[in-house]
Length: 135
Image 1: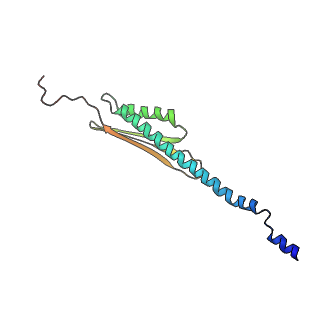
Image 2: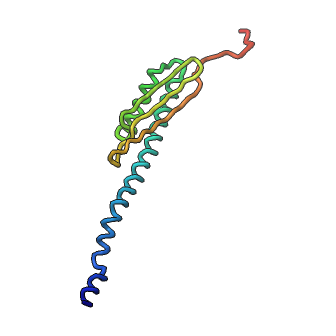
Image 3: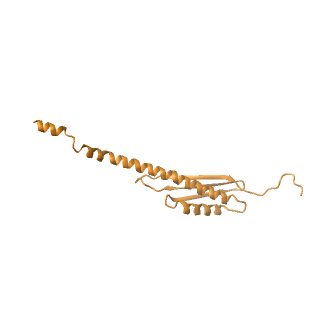
């Protein structure tokens, strides 16, 4: 009987059981950390593309199409896999130019779909003369 009690109190294999229970949680935590780091990176890519597109689209002789083309080039150079299915919207008026870049972030955790976006806005360039110029 004492041998049976000793075997019931024996903790052989406890480390394996704990490892099997804890390891999936640790792996999920590591994947979530990587996923949110990718979201952070994708937001920076979108913001950079929006700023580059704004610099192009707000020039005096430029068009909204020029801004969209510049954003697409920037996205292709930096984040074609990280920022999937990107969308670029350029709104250019005589006074203000606004660029919005967004897309879906590459998924590391299955079933988790996250989006990232960036926006840049500034005045549209135009040549003016000083008030009161008599020439």
